[in-house]
Length: 64
Image (cartoon, rainbow, N blue to C red; front, side, top):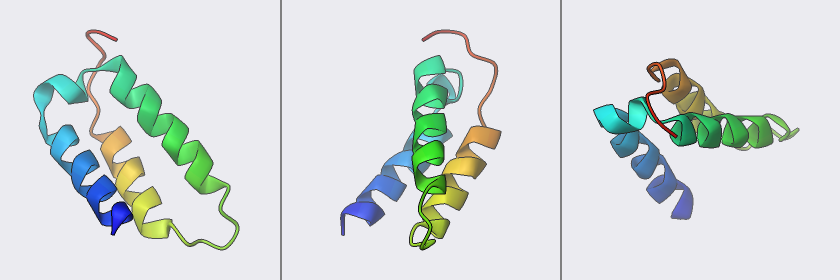
């Protein structure tokens, strides 16, 4: 399933120190969160929760 692969990719990336400090990663996660939040059927609540947790784990950006 493609969503499962996407979730694995996010989880792997957020574990890497360089990704937690990357402005591009945070910007991407914010964009994904915004789009998933528009889902009126709540089909992606689990993925949205993962994205929000990943954003919370971001560190101060050192580069973009």
